[in-house]
Image (tube, rainbow, N blue to C red):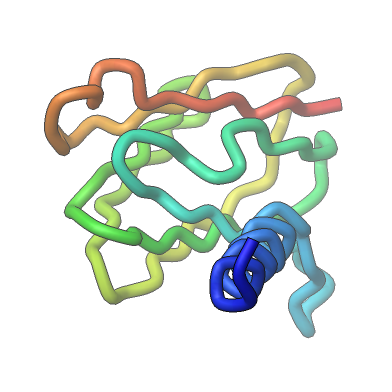
Length: 118
């Protein structure tokens, strides 16, 4: 494998690792970065704790998208080049589906993820 390809793959792995790791905001609120791209959320599964305040920070790698978690009445648009923040505190335990609710191309109908709350 050539050096440039290794660097690109390593950079992508670091980006994914950073996107998947929740970090603490100064307020003590947990921040989870979520990248959207045709036709996935990264990460697809977000583990949270009941009663823990969280901010989901969405960015789009390519096109206009949406985030909809109907069980929590959460909904926002995700615009390329911008960060969109959704704050909430899960009030129940379980596994809940979220979807992209903006038609973003072929494959859109399969763009979904899970909030796993313990």
